[in-house]
Image 1 (cartoon, one colour):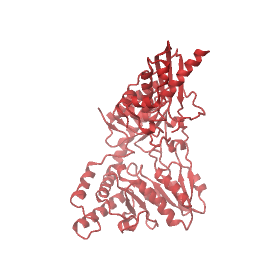
Image 2 (cartoon, chains in turn blue, yellow):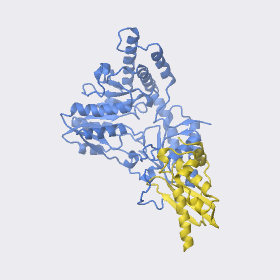
Image 3 (tube, rainbow over the protein chains, first blue to last red):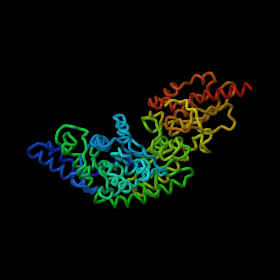
Image 4 (cartoon, rainbow over the protein chains, first blue to last red):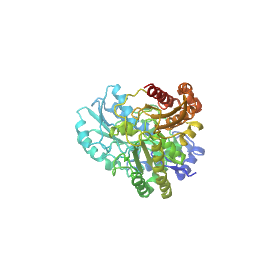
Length: 398
Length: 123
């Protein structure tokens, strides 16, 4: 059976050239980058080379890149590191309601430590209103953190506009660019942010390699204390092969990014226009301001996990924000935040394409998905409408 | 994640659909809470001669509904009343722990359909 991977926002396969670049650092150049002999020097040089190419992908300086092990770590680092560095100045932080859990849960942690946090709402397309950011700012505000692009609904935020407001007030701005860096052109100068999170596996690099851009001159308190790695800001022996892999992936991505965008966008558009031909299917997120490889829907009267399983049975791998598909059995907070009612959020499904997605794949998908929708609707008691679903008494404990 | 039996009943569910002349109908759950299912039964001489279901929910919910209808068909009302969440899950070679309660509504819906039949007959 055909296997079509349509969950690139979850992760990506390693680019073959990336694997080739990494291999010597597992096998031959295994030295500790702090060691004062040749294998150590080679590892050190490889890390610094990777720092250059990683920085170049986002138009930063090499010394502004701190390597970490995951997007979640970078988000925690940005939130806690800035909060603790600036707590004497103020204890108020602004985030959006559709941040990744690693930002939201860091914010909740900081609330327990005596910080106050404003959680900004978003509109029905998932956009943060820059005017609302302005309004939320107090004399105590030290950090604003807004996700660059939502992995669930694809919406890209007006970060540059929000940055203008932050700069006027002298407040630091962090953006979580895990879903955007390597998938659209991301430029820290143009966005004018102070901190930015990114992860290599979102652009065909390895898992376990990520980074935090910290603008030159920005003070940040480390999460991990120890040795002098990463300028003392992130201790621990470096994951040399992974860092080398991220550097290589960044280099390839910088070269191929426009080609990748031009490849996925028309394929994605075909998915959206075809899927919306089916009755009672809604596009979630912004219709234009969205990631080029990203299509997300709410399909009425059926449930997301059932769709994923049926799609997987046809060789199509995708994701859902439905309660049943999550281990926690909770609807996606992002969908709730954009005003999708709980029973509709159950029918959420997300498709994200990549450079290996072919036109044939999309033709197959466009034939298959409507069939699956109608098959599940045949089984559903609600295929004629949402009867008896108002004000329910939920007796079933989740 | 799911047993082969669950996947079989999910991909080829038995007894799907509405029943226009049902003798009893039972509904359980709600899409706002999670899953929802409806079971229709046809009863003759105290025996469930036909069962149909409609389900909104995940793979487990659909498999559970399908299995319940297969189990109940041909049973006396007393036998069918003894079908439990546990016996349905067992017949499916188990369900993941997080699906045991929210998706395992088949037995409850069936019991409600039997109750509905008895109430209607009582009138």
